[in-house]
Image (cartoon, rainbow, N blue to C red; front, side, top):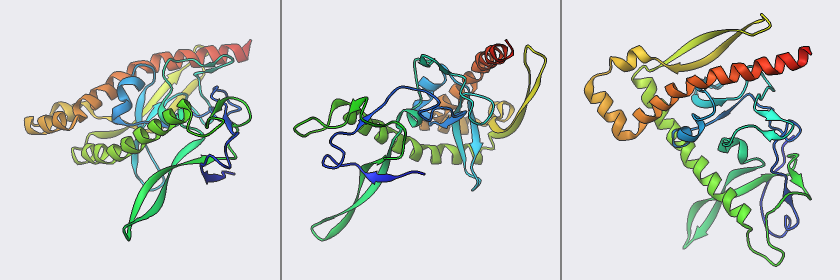
Length: 243
């Protein structure tokens, strides 16, 4: 069970964070949330699709596997890619809100929370605070990361709304045959409808370009070439299990 608390230099002076990647540390996830400002880095390694939460809200995801608790990028040496998505790297931290009173006016300020129940939290790894006070470079990097995620998730809302208004999202089913002959089916995800995209009027294309979303859309489409690599990784995994 999670144990989220406000991070502070008194109670957490000696806390350290294990930044390695493994299933034991919680990295055995088959996708993670991403956002347009991260697409350039993500699309170099992972397929980007769209998922829908229980409230019917769409969000883009970087795909790491084909089923629950399957991350095909995890190896005995760690994470086998030069870029790890921010919503994975931010563990065990998250953004919280704190109300401050200034001149009698209540203001919301973003603060860092930490999940003390996360397996990364312990006595080995990256320190958060210097011995005699002050944030370490690592904690400053975490703060920057969380800010990027915060703004990225906000941008997601506008990006998704635009895709819905232009009817650019479509569900799809992907049938996969592995080298051992087993049949697998990927369902429940959405992608960009390329036919609808091609038929958009010039003013809609111009607006997408001005918003920065046209580039994001093409990065999503380009990322699909990474499906071949993901299938190859699955074939290697299945082959090892068979042997």
